[in-house]
Length: 173
Image (cartoon, rainbow, N blue to C red; front, top):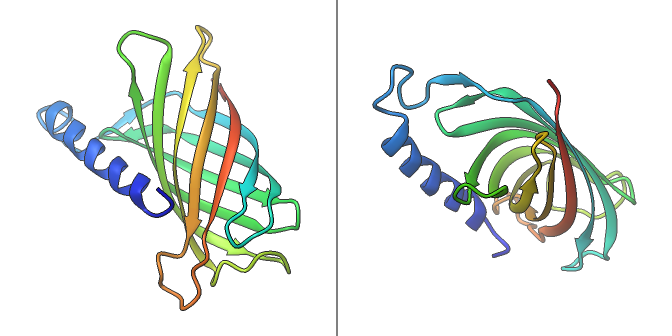
């Protein structure tokens, strides 16, 4: 699944959830509701594809509202050779019954600066992925994630990269 599969899965699951749980409410299908803002820190490794494996640090802030079932987030990542990505997009969280375990999908378009490091083909790069984790009673989340970044073939060159990481996410209020 090293393409836009996670973004498509997020869209399909989110639209299904929206139709079943949000469209009949007073706020409407994409009505704005409050949610807990979160700050996520992540360390991981860019997997070898056409790039050399390298470390990456990722910071994401989940905004204090949702639009229907979709959260909104802004992210910034920096890899060890200076490659930098910044983006804004949507998240979709699924709880596994009444357990503390969850899954979350995200899709975030953004800008990529190779800074002399790995060339992804152009400055517009899409980041999509999945995280599987556990949330404690205080709202702290710990998760493993897998994500993919590429330009969806809007440029001639589209090597793409994958990242595997460990996240810690804390509520900010």
